[in-house]
Image 1 (cartoon, rainbow, N blue to C red):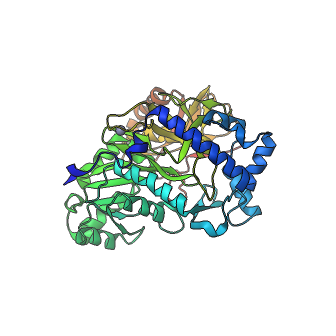
Image 2 (image 1 turned 90 degrees about the horizontal axis):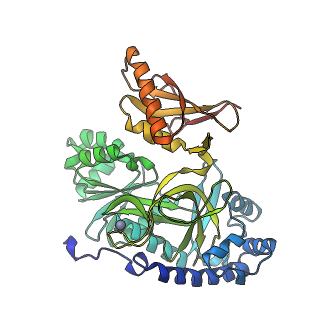
Image 3 (image 1 turned 60 degrees about the vertical axis):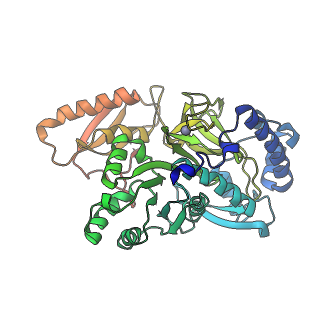
Length: 446
Ligand SMILES: [Zn+2]
């Protein structure tokens, strides 16, 4: 049954030759620059401030002539001209779907899509779920929050466009969820990678069976970096007897889901060809960085065919590391990457960039000797010579083991991240948690 399906859902774009892609991107970009200059007061102003006409944007390299666009500017624009801001470039009656995305500071942005924008969004999003293994014969239950957020309804549409049967579920009511998975013959689940952990007990208590007996064969995950830890992924796959795939990476302000793993790599493939031009910049200086293997930089995205809220040179604040370019064995030509962390969280230690997410990865690999939770304590502004890191020891750790554990954690941080940590061990659960139950990873005391 599965062998009848093509390997790529959208080969014209997913396997496009680099020269053809460059040509197509340049042509679409020229049209988009003219369109936003005419239709978006926000960008008309930006072009004027930069002293350029839209004709100056002939290729992606020319985008450097324009200033960046930031989330703060989008919020400011929407406060001034609610609800969509003056970066709305179409007639409001053309808006077909509205999401509200929350930021880490609690401020939010209204994201408007025209019917054509929805079509491109689902075209790209369905490539991602297909790359991760979803096929028309699957029945998938979608377990992300449908309220306002793009990960709910729009990812539902992305899943549906692969041809799979999609059951909308959202979050909460795990007892009902495990029942419908069993009763409706669901064999795939879409959600966050930490969610199956919550479901394990519900399966045992409600159905009296083990998770691996429930019938889930494919997990499509996103929104959290947990799957990048091989031990976590293997545990998940063994507990549920399913493939756990990192299938959903996007930046909702610009494109819902544009990256996923494939059968040949655990790194993410860039799959946004035709909808967005990806570029990298130094997160601090803003200087362009070429996309080549080993490069690290903040992702900057430019829409090339959007009608409602096209964004040019949008700073995502996500720092990526490029792990491969050129064709993959799956046939896709998009570059491969890992998400290193948020530029806003980056700490400088003796010229090295350290991300809290990197520390989390090292500590996760040392479980169960530690819980994996930690807190970096900053008592003065940068630069830093080393970092004070409070680490929670694992449950039931003995007093005598502490010096050896401190040495082990310090060595692992030095070896993996190349910085010196001054460690303090505390009991499990001692680090303050947020309302969401996550440890507060950076504490600034200045
Ligand atoms: Zn591939």
